[in-house]
Length: 613
Image 1 (cartoon, rainbow, N blue to C red):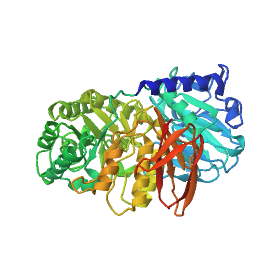
Image 2: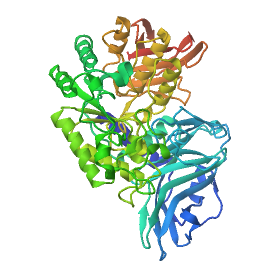
Image 3: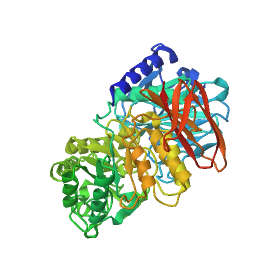
């Protein structure tokens, strides 16, 4: 994180707590008042209550809530003489009076899931949702969002945010029963609260602001205080084998691309071998015969050529035929009868060589295994960058952990902490990970689904990435997935894709076979390196015009997501010399005001450099 990023966060936090919701410190108990409160503005008056397994008596279980400005801290205490298994805690039960047409945005438990639409008509932003794909249970007739939720009622001319700003033990979620009922919930997973015992719950922030980006910036600032981001010296660039060779990648293909990168674009620092080198899911220190060579030899060659060796690992999962599963079945998350849990019985079973089994992040021997694995990969194999995939399974629901008192958040976080101890100074990228439980435990975070060489996937991944710009440089570096500049897309669609990647301000890894990339596309890739580390800000979730604010200049990003021509205009805050970033064409000196781009073709983008005069 840069110093100027940190300074902006400090100012944002001061603004929020000084003006947004100047509330006194106060406390309430969970059983009063009896009815839901109306709207977020009166959230202090909303009832909260405890839900116990089997409708057990909770009359001696109290929920205490304490507000300081826009922050709520809460705890639950068992004053009774019997232990109580608590399913969840409803911190606040609300009836919203925002109109059903109010645009909303909600984060999810798993990286691939995001939510948009309106209060009356919520919609999924992607295909791999928490509820349908990952089978996370939710009550019938509801939608669930995890971590953060925004509301943009147009008639109020302001936005609202409700967000959990910590994730140490429990998942915080927002349960919407469209269009008006909202519950703010802590998932306690049926854990037992003993007599006299208290649990500190996750911190919640609620408040209004002028813009969605500004509000989420406040959220990121507070999260970073509770979970300090892992430090990195530079924003990674590199090359990834998955999007050109998939699981059939060979040693020679990697070496051929290493040679091309050294000659054509040496600014791609990390050379990452993706899924396919290993003989089985779970056996990460072995090389499969199909790879056609010793993976360590390839990594050594990468280092000798002056680049950084990087590798894909899915540490929390293993297939049944793997050595780690066959030799250490006691290391795995268990089902109700004590056998290793087949993941497909409770969630998605895995995209390749499934069903997967899950290493238990609360098991001391698994911690030792993770430390040994990553210490070996770092110190003996020389890897300085790890793409950790399938991390969601480390926080699997529906299983039994070695530590029966641990939540799935704790299981995942303990496993990740062991990985960090082994990996030392390496860069850690989280992929297919639980978003909030990963805070403070990864240097980089994938922010979208996998890219494909189709307009539909270019469009959906761009939307997913840009809606998470608020996280970039504050919680971690966002990874918008690989930039792909070869294939059957049109020139306009490739330019849209590259502009959207630029607008994220995040990591840049090429996903093409660079031995065969056409020169014009290589020139486009070169313009993306190094990345700016600054994400574009957009006025709203439509993501039509974004601004990247850099020293001595700003960049205007115009995006036509539609199947028809579109005219867009953006604000020019200072007198500037304007040019097209991709072509270099000069658009002359422009005064303050607006810049209009007329009749943009379908699926197109313009990226303008505005150098301050």
